Structure formats: structure tokens, C-alpha cells
Length: 320
Ligand SMILES: Nc1nc2c(c(=O)[nH]1)N[C@H]1C(S)=C(S)[C@@H](COP(=O)(O)O)O[C@H]1N2
Ligand SMILES: [Mo]
Image (cartoon, rainbow, N blue to C red; front, side, top):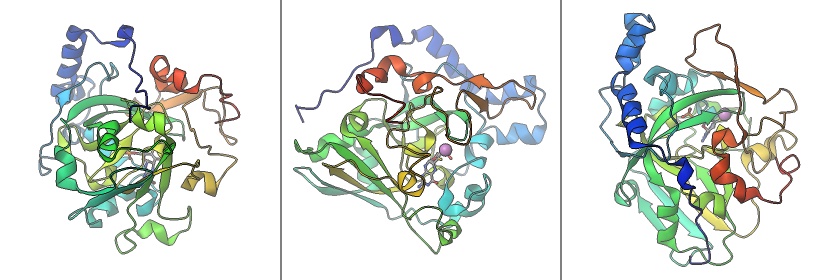
């Protein structure tokens, strides 16, 4: 483990406490803001978390959060990509309730000294939960702001002690054909597999997520645990993880296998590299009013100061 250097963000990125406190108020006043914007009472109700879900709070981490108002609960839990449940944005909310998330274990193995199968309860207690507000930039050129609850994936990886041969980390996600109408279509080779380089996986920004908006994750967002890798396109953030393997060779992820010309291993948010079928220069911000202009996409989704050093010397147009 001592061989892996965990990069630390520069001090200039640290958010002043006062700014952070005012951002906190956005969360508390989400309903009020809805009223100011003139939304209907129905939309207002949907802008706050579902009270039936158990609470899961985290200590606000201002340093790692974007200074933007989070999207409404209804956007975050009703406009989703989770192809196991179908390809329409409403399919995950409609169908994901059938996924069985209890009991749940995560097997962590491969190039590690201490392979181990963790129970979800043990994982929830492994490290203190933090709340981090991340922007999620989908490869489809839309984005959202989401207040996740979790802790750095590095906390989990440290437990199993990666060997010197561990150069990549793969994430395998749940496959429950009875509950997942989407897997009948072979859009990708199920189960959904994603992967990171070890230094990306160990980066403190890479979050293992258990909750959102102070509640445990709803199934459609990847219950009971998923990743959030904020400087990469959303598809890198695998949902409903069941297996983590540390490996020596660069893995082939599901999307690379399905469409190698469109989806690369790195998948860093990069406005200069177009998707073969569309530009990545701008994004539509979900929740903005209908005629709001598209917004310029930032390199590394705005996290360049922290993560650009990971790619020093690489040609990111070739390694897209
Ligand atoms: N298992 C699994 N994980 C997945 C996906 C998926 O289809 N299956 N979609 C990805 C994509 S394309 C995006 S944009 C994000 C969406 O996360 P959200 O619905 O919680 O916003 O999840 C990612 N993780
Ligand atoms: Mo996505």
C-alpha cells in the first residue's frame, strides 16, 4: 500500500466555511427555492426526499463539493440511466423496486493480500460517511448536481491491501434477471462491468456511495452501493456493485466491448473530444427551465486542478 501515492487537492481548492454554510442552506431550502421559481405544488412535493426511505446522513465535505444548488429529488431519482431496468429515463424508477438489495455482500479480491467478502452493514460502518455535492456529467451531454453520501473508495481498498501487481480495479454489478427487464436485450454483455486505474480508484474524490440527500440510496440510483467518479462520464460510476477485483492488466469494460469507437477506458469528461455521434463541448443542465441555454462543459468536469496530474504525459484524444 505504501507504494500508492494518494494525491491531495491543492489548498486553493478548499471552499471557505462561509460559502459552504450558505450552500448548506440551499439543501434546507430546496422547497422554498422551488416556490420562488414558480413551480407547481406537485413539483414542489417531489423536490424533497422520499420520507419512507431510512435516513443516512454524512458530515458535509465542503472541500470536495461543487458550489451549486443540487437538483430536485425528483430529477435525481426519476431521470436515470440503469439499463438493467430499461433504456427510458423513467424505467429505473418504475422497475428497480423489484431488485433485491438485502442481504447484500461485496466480494473484494484479485491482487490483494487480504481478500474478503464484506456484508453491506459492515461496509456502511467501515469509515465515516460524508456528504459531497458532485456534478454528474453523462456522456449523453446532460448533467445534474447530486448530494451523495458515502466515503472514499480508498478506505475500502486499504482494508484488503493491494499487492504491487494491482494496477487496475474492476467493478462488477448485480445481475438479477427476474427483477431486471432490461437484461433481456443484449445492449451490453451483462453483467455491467466498469474499471478504473488504481491511482484513479485510490483518488480521494472517488466516492463509494450509500446514500443521497440524507437518505439511503433508492434502488434506481444503485442501491445499496455504487460509485461516483465526478471527473468522468457517468457510465464509469457503476451501480449496485457486487464484486471488486484488483488486476494487473487493463480490463475491457462493458461499454468498451459494446462500442469501442465510442467509449474508451478513461472516459474523462473532455469537451475537446467529441463522441463520434455528437459534440461534448456543451451540456444540458437537467432541472433548468426549458429555454435555458446549454452550458459549456469543463475539462474533467471542473476537477482538473485535482485530477489532471493523473494523466500527465498522456494524449487524452487517443486515450479517450
Ligand atoms: N449497473 C449500472 N450502472 C450504471 C449504469 C447502468 O446502466 N447500469 N448507467 C451509468 C450511467 S450512463 C450514468 S449517467 C449513471 C447515472 O446515475 P444516476 O441515475 O444515479 O444519476 O449511472 C451509471 N451506472
Ligand atoms: Mo451516462
